[in-house]
Length: 399
Image 1 (spheres, one colour):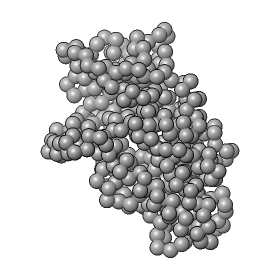
Image 2 (cartoon, one colour; image 1 turned 90 degrees about the vertical axis):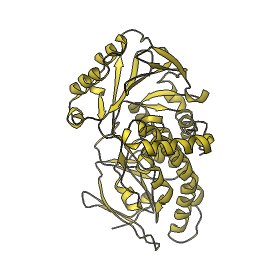
Image 3 (cartoon, rainbow, N blue to C red; image 1 turned 90 degrees about the horizontal axis):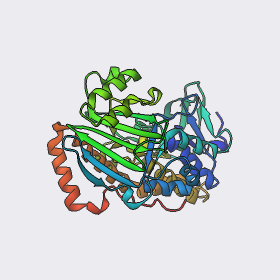
Image 4 (spheres, helix red, strand yellow; image 1 turned 45 degrees about the horizontal axis):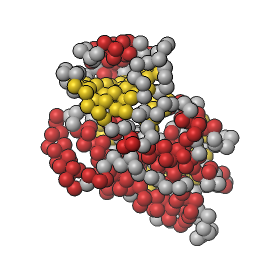
């Protein structure tokens, strides 16, 4: 078992956050490898809504201009109650840049900017041995028997993170709400312009955002049912259940669902989240192992901030590592690595806590069994901390 320079930093998970973290480190001249269990790039879900704070991070990564060419700017928002047809204006991005990106476009753009062989596919981590009290390297065990001894391990392995359990975070929880997502292609121009629309009727919410002039991303949230686990395995059943859920919605919305691309339909029957209080009381790192993205702060999609927050993580983490890892504090560099991860945790803890807390509050609005928790959280948020909630003006800073 041999330790090599190329294994100083290992990123577990090759999703958006893992690739963004590797790219951020590359921009700072720091080498890393990404271990991805899939055999190719994975892009679960059709699209991702990129908020102004996410675009600031993409600017720092040097790929914002390329991605802007793939998606229209969302310039207005409209909330419509279906029963009475009442329209209300919705703020979009607090006046900043907001676009709906295809996940595949974002993933491919991130990957193309990385050095060759940065991402190693078919690498599944089965266990991690961490000694938080000594200067010993952590040991990663892969499914094929390979053992790696990196100086730093970054868990970007999603909501069911293996690395999170090592760090000490409690398991994620789930709301009693399901989400359905899809994309509809229009042969001619779609009728939605550059606007975000949100339709609401009897606890069923359907939102849509243009990707470009011919493609529209849509999502629907409703109460979880006992058949959703079965429905999620069959994309035609997903479409049928969506049409059933939007009975009474405008005809052009029903038509949009009926014409959606079956290949892009996805039903999440358990919308998972990391409890905000877990983020407050748990350290973000153990030894030189840390977390980023959904592995750290899994958020339900109610704020559309999960992707943007993950990109923020990548920029901040790479900055902290590059500032500290070059300092020869000890022969192994472990003290410098720990200092970097402590700095990262300090910068990110309250930011992700507030995002997670608001997501939790919004999520409980769909869950009548959580009325007391909902009420207490809403009162606390509105009265005491209005200036800290869902701050899309947040800037992760220079890389």
